[in-house]
Length: 219
Image (cartoon, rainbow, N blue to C red; front, side, top):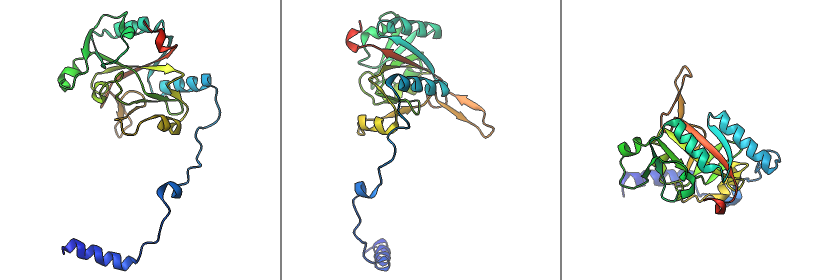
């Protein structure tokens, strides 16, 4: 018997028998509000746009047909010569743009990813009440690292299918076994004097495109 066993045995005898406890699911009170207030779908999307902008994300709204032209303009404005793309990014999204596409590969080094001017991804869920985007590494989003290394991230959110009001509603639709990345605005931190610095552990610029329309309508 080790010293650890002796000590734990003494502690157990001092505490006495442990009473039976209800299972965790029954012990935790779960009658908290699922969302704060009642909103229409349009109001929920408006709240998402407002909170995204409050976190200094740049928000755009467009239809499915106008999405390729909008992405072309956003990339051209940034002067993006190459763009990092996940494996299953809908091909129609970048149909109007002509950057060099850097594909998400397991063998890519951090230095290679850092040479990408921009990254364009889809989204798993967008949470209106917190202005949060959640990526789950699905094929249209790629590995987590491709959204953390490049300095400019364009995230496309389908409205209203991928928009929920609250965190509890988001958790119900997410797979906890997947690598989840929760994004609330561009990467930033503040020092003791509250001087804000952006681009510390992620993109300095986050642009969110809220796109309406059916995926089947994309070119």
